Amino acid sequence: MEKPILRVENLYYAYGNGKSALDGVSADICEGEKIAVVGSNGSGKSTFFLNINGVFTPEQGKIIYRGITANKKNLNELRKNIGIVFQDADNQIIASTVRAEVAFGPMNLKLPKEEVLERVDRALAYMDLSDFKDRPPHYLSGGEKKRVSIADIIAMKPEIIIFDEPMAALDPVNALMLEEVLDKLGSEGKTMLISTHDVDFAYKWAERVLVFCQGKIIADGTPLEIFKNTEILKQANLKQPTLLEVYESLVKNHLLEDAKAYPKSIQEFKVILENRCFSQALLPGLI
Amino acid sequence: MEKIKNSHGHKVGEGFSIDFYAYSSKIRHWNSTFKVSLSVLNLILCIVLNNPYVSVAVIVAMAYLTIVKGELPVREYLSILSIPIGFILLGTFTIAIDFSSQPVGQYNLYLGFCYVFTSHGKLKEMVFLILKVFGAISALQMMTLSTPSSEIISVLRKAHVPKLVVELMSLIYRYIFILIDTYTKMKNSAKSRQGYCDFKTSLYTVGSIAGNMLVISLKKANACYAAMEARCYDGDLIFLEEVKKVKTIQIITAAAFTIFLILLWGFTL
Image 1 (cartoon, rainbow over the protein chains, first blue to last red):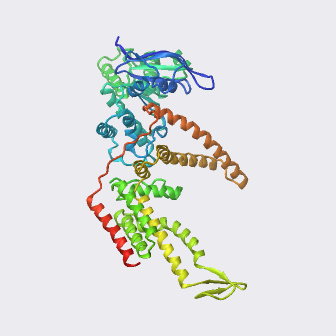
Image 2: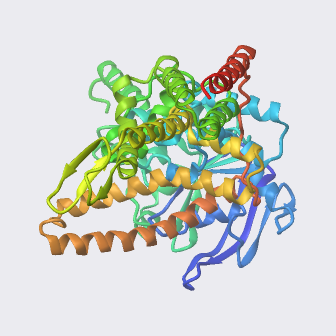
Image 3: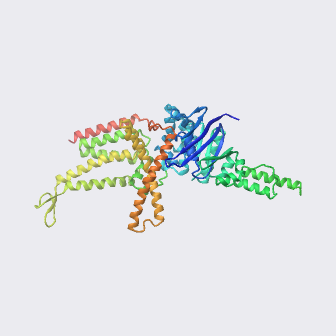
């Protein structure tokens, strides 16, 4: 197995009201992994993210980034290399122009000004925001704000990018745009963690799924393993991805042979259906 | 130059539209330090020289910059200026008139128990004062209608205004819009539930919204601080400031105009 770049060991965290939000969380994250983090509201996903980013200090447990255990002194190293795109872009955006906003992270990294400018221009071009750079955030639409908040993080060039419910409050066009960005980042080998309630998206996109339930990771595996395990889904209040459910019911009713070729997308599903029709035409009565 | 959609422009109030005009001004790309200094210099000249001709020259020049160079529609400009004009008229009116038991002055009006009167001298004094104040205001208006707040704040930072003040200004500027947004949402949701059906209910609703806003502000502040920390914020709020080159022609024009004002003052003393 690959050596993990981020290792989380037995993390405990409780909020001021004494309610524990993380109750012994351990996970290894390897380079280039695409991880979906699922679980109901209040199951500890966001708390987990803020802990591994170094914003919250865990009560117990260790966060080891590239062999170095995080402590008060090298906290910035953690924040530099792990970026979070927050759920509500309005909470994240603090500057009064898009350019200044995207530059906020790089400026805090104390980079030389030329480098900051270069990174900002790159990040804006990446998110297709170059025309917006002088605009104040309060004259942007929701989708544009989301793009700005992603450009914020891209400009910091972190190794791991965390998206906290990025699909929330996005219209279909912007959701599609986001998926394209995720694919683009994925093809560049970025390690990504995405928390989401959209099981269909998690099933389609992720290579690995972490299931949170009441401050614990109750399951960790490939999407197929997780979403076929009805017990886990029940425990975490999740439903099965539509495509998986459709496929399984087709198999169950002998309309498809059980080839274990689980389709991840509608396209794959269509190909399976077409192949089936084709073989049926050739060998009538066999299936 | 991209077109900005005036999504909440006039609906919310004057503050919003001024901010909007600043962003759509055609002289926004001018160096902000230059614009702020020009505006302040004209303001000072207007007050110190205390000369009606100078004031008129400043009013005309600033209107020229805002309307012709900045391409702000004349109607919008006048509507923005109408508020200060109202205040100036109200304020200077009391200078022009006086009360007396005798019919004195060039113009007087008998009210039954006393005379309201005024004179050429007093009227002249009033007009000069109006021009002076109006000149000063149009100089400042030129700045606010062409320079977004973030740039004015960066000029203040360069002018060594304390860091705390400058940082507070930029954060307040950013969050005021979020606050207004939140308020509008809460108000609308209260409206849809008959929260403003009569006076008593309205009072209660306004109170509840105010209380709720405080709680939400505190929550938001925490969330924002977490977001800032996540991006390596370490106590110093530093924003990227663009360098906009100031053109020589602009400096020469500004210098020439200043000399012209002083000469005007010298000749009409």
